[in-house]
Amino acid sequence: SITNVLDSYGLLLKNQPVTTKAITSGILATVGDAIAQIRSSKAQQVPVPSQSSAVIDNQPDAVDADVNAANDFEYNAKRGLAFLVFGALYTGAFQHYWFQFMSNHLIGWGAGLHLWGSAISSGDAVGDVLLVDQM
Image 1 (cartoon, helix red, strand yellow):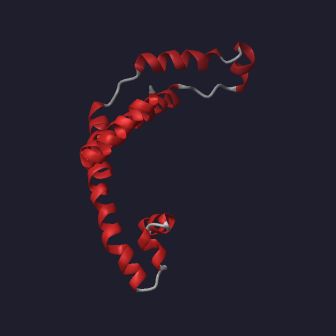
Image 2 (cartoon, one colour; image 1 turned 90 degrees about the vertical axis):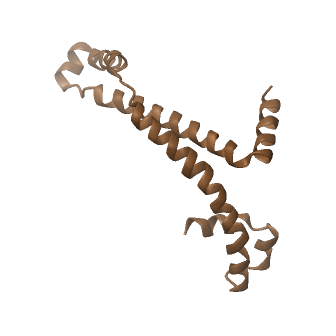
């Protein structure tokens, strides 16, 4: 069931956080890029019908273009591999350590400079940490 899958994933995150995050991020980045490649290919194949052809033949060109896009589509594996590596190394692994660094160093530093209250040090102000990360 979905609960078992989520429980197993949570256990993996607890026991092997970097590996789990790297694999998850790599897969999500690759799948996202594949979807983008497919959609981009379809968008390039669909011609803009002129007013006369749209009226005369009720836009069969758009339907034909969808079929042609499916037939002409070539997955760019080199690009997909680049997204896999980026997702795994940067989004999954590097950011794991980056957020740990921020939690361990910036939170106390910011409280010491009175940039935010001590509530953030106790974990009550997660939104403030996210805001600082985006700066």
